[in-house]
Amino acid sequence: MGILRGLRVVEFEGLGPGPFCGMLLADLGADVIVIERPDGAVGGPGAIFRRGKRSIALDLKRPAAREAALRICANAEALIEGLRPGVMERLGLGPDDVRAVNPKIVYGRLTGWGQTGPLAAAAGHDLNYASLAGAAWYAGRAGEAPVPPPTLAGDVAGGALYLAVGILAGLLRARETGEGSVVDAAIVDGAAHMMNLLLSLRAAGGLPDERGRSMVDGAHFYDVYQCKDGGWISIGPLEPKFYALLLEKLGLSGDPDFANQYDAAKWPALKARLRDLFASRTRGEWTALLEGTDVCFAPVLSPGEAAEHPHMRARDAYRIVGGVLQGAPAPRFDGAPAPEPGPVPARGAHTTDILREAGLAEDEIRVLTDAS
Image (cartoon, rainbow, N blue to C red; front, side, top):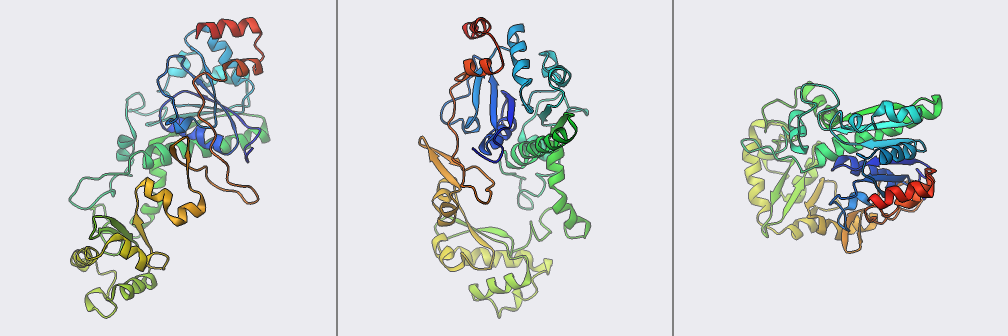
């Protein structure tokens, strides 16, 4: 069950963001069929991105397997592929091939650099895409190396989530007009688009290209601080009323040095003072004092700690399935319980069922399954 029940998506095996997009759609109820290589190595209970999908193993270099894949695509509304530009065309499974058997299909293509451009054919990974798009620039302190959070800014946010939006938009159009479309979801495009909140601040003069001089990467009131026990906390009272409350909680309300919140010249010295202050107590002590107030506070938690935090537990934001910690399906919808993560299928576990659904005869199925 789920809000996308009845939607069938074909996903061609890939790495990272493509499978994540397929997982997201499966979490929301779509029937996601992942076509995998018979000899692939990715699998097991740790392969969370495969959860909730059905798996078929096909050697797409064989003509019979290619034809079977096309017949599976003929009954789908959307397709996900994350291979380098031109690979699907060489397999005979490019957009023109698939749309010849299914004109309404939304063909989702996810790459780092995009289908076109000088770098389209080059290899790359999340860090490279976020870096070129400008999304890694402010990820770190002034004078230190930028360190964006692994996979989040590029693969997941800039790639998988933009592909999901593109596919759903394409589906709306296809259901209205009967015409499919090709979605070119490039991680560099998505990461650049995500920069628009920061670029709005930049346009207003509040975010110089020099790192460490804006409210979000240089201010004493928007940062993480280490505590006495080695733990870390985050504070972010950008607004004056929240800043005033933080000063009150810290016993600094009457301190003239902290009076002018936005005086950037004082930020380095004030940051040093807060660094010493927060180092005087443990993370737990600061959490007891500040959490749940309007000072804009949160402890910096590991994934395991986050799963046990009372708020995250109340939201049921993490699950342990088969001994594996997983982020729960999101977002939520009113009137519906939070969905359970689907099981992680064994490679090729649903091959026969899927081929039958595609209309293959038993002798055709035997040829394909015996070969795998």
